[in-house]
Image 1 (cartoon, rainbow, N blue to C red):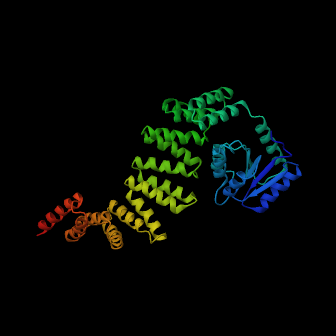
Image 2: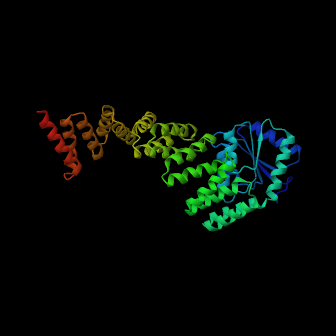
Length: 390
């Protein structure tokens, strides 16, 4: 049981003045005994893993790791997931509320904060933590079953949660999720659709419907549900990447590029995200967008010859042979033993009808690997092209 007056409180806000202000308000209403501060989500996680905490009060907008990301980390941690969390923020937009609700926020308070509202919310949150409704107890047990790889048990507990509160979308979406994990896509679809119909801001339901239809290769429906989830909560990077991949599978390359641009914008490490997404695009033959990403990466990391090669291959795939040759020739000068570069160079030279240069690259390959079948085949084309020209 959490004692309102003796509890340990963690206040998370990038503004020290706000941390102190919340602390003072809590002292005025005599809530809390020990207080800890953190100024971003990563700092908060370090405190939570080091100190006993009964209540977390956090801002949404913070550097390094924002409130929604911190909340998701708390709910995914077996030791921390049941912690009561209150989000205090000036952001009243739908997408922020949806992100918070998606990770099971306990209370949401909009700034400017008043002592009266703070007191009411904290009392309510602690009362619910001390006296959880049956639905929440069943869902907690379902989560424990999932942790223990007992999906059948999780389904059973979610069904009990559904009976305990048939008017909430949470049991329906959790039941759908567990059926999805069990591989029963038909029942998963039924319950996720029910959750989505009950709560048009249930991002979790929309996201997993997107995954479900992707698994069924029904990419049009997958796009519909991922797009709905993205429209409500665009800052979830994993969701954006999955949506972008779905669009790539549908050959909707331009739309995928727009989604990936949004993902990169909100990412903590844009350069790493660009590289990850560029690899997806290469595999999906979305070469033009991949080339844009490699170009940006190369401008920031000009010494990385592996990027120069990939840039050349992307340009080659996009049909921009003259630009591809520039990068592949530069790469070949630095890495003189890379057979792949020489093969691609030869292919590009043949495309622009320069068989002599292609032959030179291929002979270099055959000196190192005389039985290279691809080089031998291309060399025949060089001879044929050269004979035809004469």
